[in-house]
Length: 186
Image 1 (cartoon, rainbow, N blue to C red):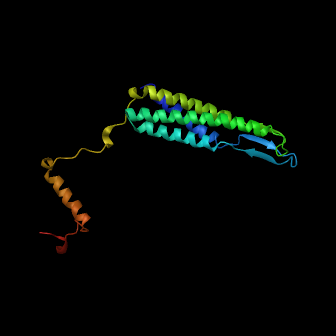
Image 2 (cartoon, rainbow, N blue to C red):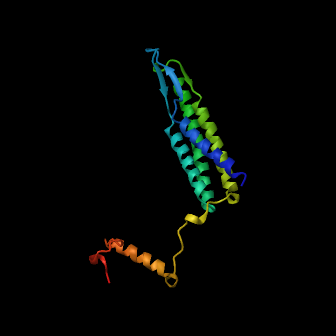
């Protein structure tokens, strides 16, 4: 129980902050022809998508139980791992793009956002792996809102049958509260 909230908060925070960091500018540069014009570029929309998948998985982890919870935690871990791969690939491609001498970009620098995204995804990955391992010991939501079991025909009470008649009347377009003679079926 005491591992539940820290793990969930780490997973939610890591995933959501990674999604935010993935939408920021990953490098800035200047054009030699227009030194006053600053170029910014974002190269990894896949990182954002995978971080959002991990974030959605944490929402599902909160409301499920049993083996399904562990499977979803594994899916979150895979999404985080994929996000880390896209950050590393994006950093390599960004580094290569900023070092080209093609005259398009003069001086360029990588911002801190890809590092923030990688750090947050790493936190979310560790939380997801912990969830896979610790989920059987965590508390589960109440079964209060689960679908009720079917009521056997012999167990129908008078009150239930009256309620059933009211619903049938509504389905037929009859107002059960209307006492006029044309709506009464006696």
